[in-house]
Image (cartoon, rainbow, N blue to C red):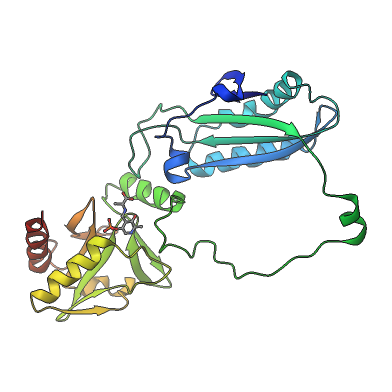
Length: 278
Ligand code: PDD
């Protein structure tokens, strides 16, 4: 089986990609699946257009969308699939680069992979008699408590922060600041340390839990509850926690200063205590 990878047609067993590929690390990419009958690609243009639109949305170079149909055609030829039904799979990722959420250096080439195989329709009996389905709750996007590599929304959020000259992007759900793109968020409100409760909409950080314990040990009252985005102007302190950001004070959000625009005493103290554990 010949496949296409990054400009070359090669045997499938020889096609390898870097473990630093952002598709592997972050699900930072997209794909298309389409059919060909006797070498004629079905609905090729709309598939290429959807890929192009997706690449534009993800700010990935759109040239893979231009190559999509010619490369698919060549693969059908190379694999003797110009007769009968064939299925084409195409995937493009933001390419390979050392792991960080924001985009890699400009010029990092996207990874482009295409593969074809024979297509078999579902059994005729099913088309004749119909098939069964089940219902499931729509939990897509609601499994943030799993430290999954499906991080595309986090990547795009973090890149938006970088583009705005900020370090972190804070996710707001229903008016509540729930967590960062790769961190948890805490605020000092009144005399309490407030952070979002563990649930399926956030990753309950190991650092978060440790910092809450450190705060309690200092006699601080911890409340697991909402930090309202509309009330950020009123918090005494705001900071994020995470393995890579440690305990990072936030002094501005959306260009507006937090409190007096300087790191607060609790964040500073908690960073000290946290680093003491090392
Ligand atoms: N991310 N929330 C999200 C969405 C995260 O990705 C992370 C960490 C955290 C904090 O978790 P912890 O305190 O266990 O590191 C919260 C890692 C650092 C990353 O993706 O690089």
